Image (cartoon, rainbow, N blue to C red; front, side, top):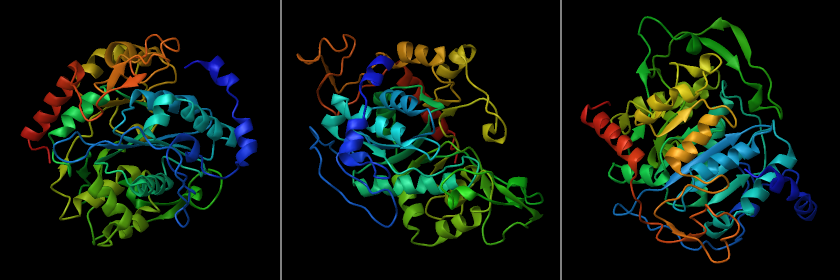
Length: 408
């Protein structure tokens, strides 16, 4: 990231023009303006994309990415966005209430400054901020809100992927799209395990209150002195907070036609670390979805439950095992760690200020040659064709192994 360039491109004239305070900033970044709450929205056509992706079983799928961060992380979000960008996909970027209005405006301005994002109109920035506690139910609420926004955008995406600034891809989007092209589009990659019948998980027994659900700033969770017994209307399942979920499952959770997701949402409102149990419990208690799960999330992590304590950061000593694992993503990465640069150079082939090249890149546009001599994506070709690389082969073998072993 060119920090000097960012500092020169002050977005405050844009702020003055639009009087941005709590207004959502998607008008700078994509093709629509979203008001940022569940009850009211406005859509304004801003810029037609160059081309919309073709959809259907004969074409690669579409991923909907929700990328989140907090104060001081808008540049990390931008770097992560460029590492997972593909014109077929949809992207929703969100800074929580820990960030400043300036950071949210600046993120939208920087996104708007990228020619490729303007052209395809598939990157959107949430301007209204609210607190999100990754250990509390506000994290589930925020994820459901993001899914609802991405559903409202209307693109026919197939899978939902949540990323934070501590995550990073281990394969290119061409690799990921290629591998998922051959999969049933109702599959859910979600780790899960049932709680022992004779021993309730302490996280489930404890009753907590998350002030982030009703306050403008993040506050510490409140713990009740009382413990509750295990429910008998459904079974509790737990697992990893990282997952890749199908569109049909996200629609099920957002619209809650059979009431199970809504009922479970109320129950998990008082549970700590609900991101490790809410979606698992919805899936495994649903006749429709329980047989659509792959008991692996395609994430490379260190430690069984990184949210239970301070997460263990990845470093260069983990590089070989991480790349050879066949995983699609990894976590927990430190900001500007040398390992990220190594992944950019050796795996993604991403230039320092550009996006990851793929089959959709046609080389250098005549008027873009002087901006970044390493950017192969300043002009575009067919966005409906993908090409697998070496990392994609590892991922494909890993997914095939999971399916053949019936890890359901």
